[in-house]
Image 1 (cartoon, rainbow, N blue to C red):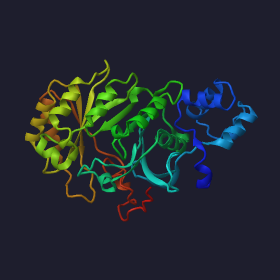
Image 2: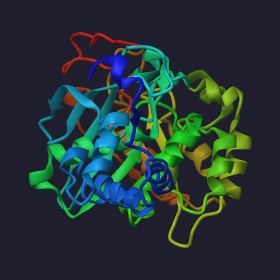
Image 3: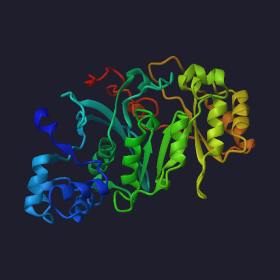
Image 4: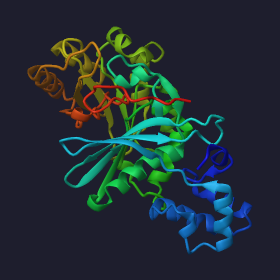
Length: 368
């Protein structure tokens, strides 16, 4: 669809049930017609309005004349030896954006025995600038919309339709800082977790943040919300300032106070993510400091050995990983080692930087 035509057509993907009901009324139809659209998109995963025979022909034509359903489109797809797939997707400029450019984002699909996990991006690029993460080298290109977040999930599910497992997990751990695009993230999550929408349980959705305290406090007030993961990655402020500049604005004491005040549900704990950088933050002393920091907070710690990239860090030794985990466990802090999948296709944690499979060449980045 040419941009001049696209710009005048509102994207239906990402609109809530209430918004679709209001749209139906504005086009002279009963509100329940909007509910039919909502069910078709998110429960049935049908997106061709022209073929929705349960809608009146006149309504379908009005929708075709004035709206569109814009799913991300494939640019590249990189299958890993471990079954993980990294997608490089193109998304249109948003409805209120004046550029004709497309933006590139990444999504990761990880199949497991009884489930699949989809890691989605919430921004194109990232402004938080964590020193160990390749995504930071992109900078922030732009926020993405709720529809563009949902579209990542829908595209990945459709590509694996023939082999889907009974359960889907969604992790907001791709490109971007979710809590710096709060309203769009929550709009997408409400549809994802709506039993009448995509019907994914809040127990199976996790949002990961670098520690944006106002966003954490807003999330705490949400009636329906995902699980929360905090990217800690350091045992003191000096260390964290070096690798996570956001710590200068929201230092550890303030961040951990927000964690203590966060209202956990009866089945819930906070997840603490700790990327182990060899020789930097992986010593037994670091582990003991982390245990003290997390005392009296209901947490589990995921230890993530750093995934190689063109950055000045090293993966930790296996014995240091185990000693770190054991030290936390002995201090009554549950800790688990999480080895990232998809490293061979640059799909692992911290590797999403629009790099060709094998890291040989950067993809052309068409930014707005």
